[in-house]
Amino acid sequence: MRSHLVLATTSLLALLLASGCGSDGGPAPAGGEATGTRGAATPTSTAAAQEEPVPSRLTVGDQEATGTLDPNPAARDLVSLLPLTVPMGDLFGREKPGPLPRALTGEVEPVLTYRVGQIAYWPPGRDFFVVYDGDALPVPDPGLVPLGTVDSGLDVVAAAGADFDMTITVLD
Image (cartoon, rainbow, N blue to C red; front, top):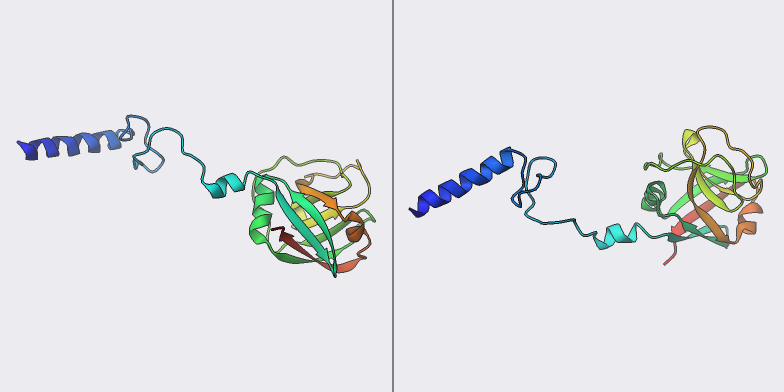
C-alpha cells in the first residue's frame, strides 16, 4: 500500500512539473524546475548593497576627488571593474575622458545634456569621463549614461591636464 502512495505522489509531482506548476501550486520558475520556496524571494545582502549609491575615490597623482556612483546597472558594472586606472585626456575644455577596458553593460536612460560634476559613460567610445565645465550644454546622440557625481575635488580633475592617469576605487 505504501509503495502505491509513493508512486502516486511521485506521478502527481511529475504531472505538476510537466504542466508548468511548481510544488506550491504556482507557476514553475523558468527552466521548469520547482524551487520549493513560497512567495517573493528576499534580496541577498549583495543585491541589497548594489541598490545603494557607492562612495568612490578618483585619484590623480597624489591628489584625489571623491564621488558617489549611482545605484544603476551601468554604474554597478563599473564598480565590478574597480579598482581601475584609466589613461585620461581633455576634451573640448569641459570633460576628462578615458577608455575603459571593456564596454559597460546595463540599461540606463541616457541624458542629453552635460552637468558639471557629472561622472558618465559615452557608449560609442567606451569612455568613462568627468565633466568639469559646460553645464547644460547639449550632448549628441546616443547621449550619456549617467554613472554618478563628483562630490569634492572637482578642481583636482579639472587641473589634471591633457594627459594623466586616474585611478578609480571604491571608498571603504
